[in-house]
Image 1 (cartoon, helix red, strand yellow):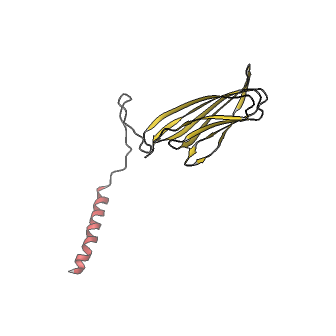
Image 2 (cartoon, one colour):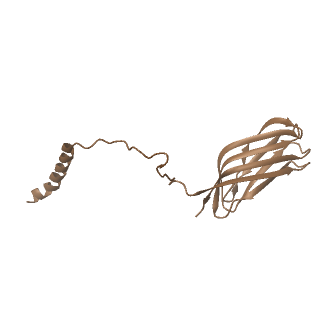
Image 3 (cartoon, helix red, strand yellow):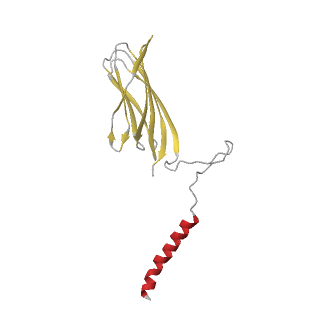
Length: 172
């Protein structure tokens, strides 16, 4: 009796497997979406929290006799800033070399990210520099993002314009 009882689960399993094999499992088929452009399939990004678009534009002048300067802005409380693009436009005296960087704060650290610029033309006010960079930088809530420029010779003023774009996400 015990021998029959021990063999019963194996017999049931064998019967089920046999039934599946004899029935011929249906072949896997592609899923076809038949929605029209006027009634698209709703899609949502489950990997990311809600994003709020962000753009900041800063303008400042580097005074005569100043080697460096900068400007910044504060990330809103309760939000983390994700910077995806930085654009820099500057005008300096001919013969000057400019160096730009951004310092997004993470925790208590300020990390320098240097940004290249290219001199593109000589205008009536001097040499025009531009640079646009696709990046992925992060800045913590309530912290100051610093935009800094240095130059090798401090003669005459220089004008700098920064544009930063990305998005804000809620921080729990």
